[in-house]
Image (cartoon, rainbow, N blue to C red; front, side, top):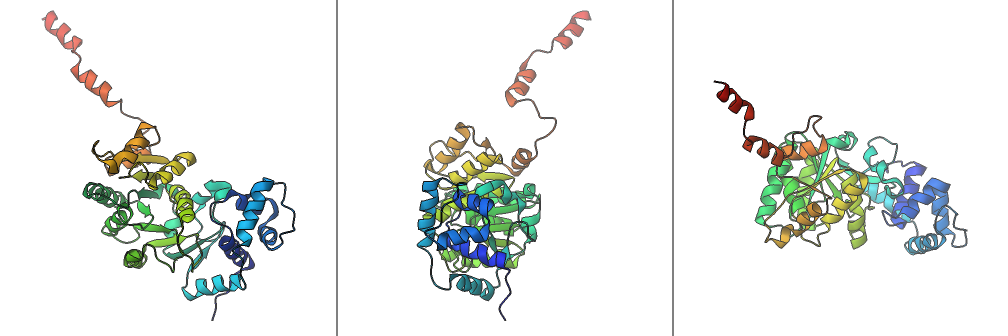
Length: 334
C-alpha cells in the first residue's frame, strides 16, 4: 500500500524536481506567493512574474523549470519515494534540521532521508563537516582519519559528501568509533548512490544508525550544478567545516566559502609547502577564511572558544625568555 503524502509534501516534491536546488528565486517566490502559486507559475507561461523577484531572473527560472515538466511527474516521484521507504523532511516538520533555515531563500524545499533522523535535530554544534580532495594523498587520508576518529569520540557527528578520497576517509573513520557517528549529504537521489563504488559505505552508515540525506529527488543523478548547490548544505548543517586537504581548484573550497558566509567556524589543515594537494588549505588560511587546525581539540576550541583565551604563543615565548627582574632584585638585596 502506497504511503500517503500531504499536499504540501507533494507540491514540494514536484517543485524540487522542476527547480534546481539553491536557486534563490525559488525561495523568494515561495516566501512571496506560496508553494502552490509558485508551481502554477511554471505550468502557466503566460502568468506574470511577481514583483518580489527580478523580472529577468524570474523568466529564466521559469524557462528552465518548465523544460523539466513531464506527465505524471508528481506521481512518479511519490512512487519512488514510497518504494524505497525514504523519509520526507520539510521545514517546520518533524526531523527538519533548523540549521538549514540560516540559508534563507537558498534553503532546500525538502530533504529525502534514510537512516537516523535524530542526527539532524541535534544542535548544530554537535556536527562537524570534514571534506577535501577526491584525489587525496596518503598524508591527507591519515590526518582526516585521525581528526574524524577523535572528533567522533568527543562525540561529534561527522558530516561529509560521500565522495572518494577525504570524504570517504572521514566517514569510515567515524564508523570505527561506534554507531550514529556520521552523515552523508548526497548530490544525487538516494536511490542513485554516487559514486557507485561507495554504495556499500552508504549502507554501512545507515545500518550503523547514521543518516544519508539529499535534496535531489529519487531517480535523478548528480550534476555539476547539484554538487555546487550541495556545498551550502554541507556548510550549514555543521557548527564547523574542516578542510583537511585540497588543491587550489578543489570543489571543497566552496564548502569553506559557504560556511564562512554563514558565520560558521572554518578550519584547514596545513600540508607540506611543496604539495599542490594542500595549496587550497594554505589559501584559505592566507586569506583569513580558515583557522589552522591540526587536532580534534583545536576544532572543538574553534566551535566553542574558551572564555579565557591564552595569550598568543609568541607572547608566551617572549615572557619565558624575558629576564626575571624580581628575582634579580632579591639576589641583590642579599
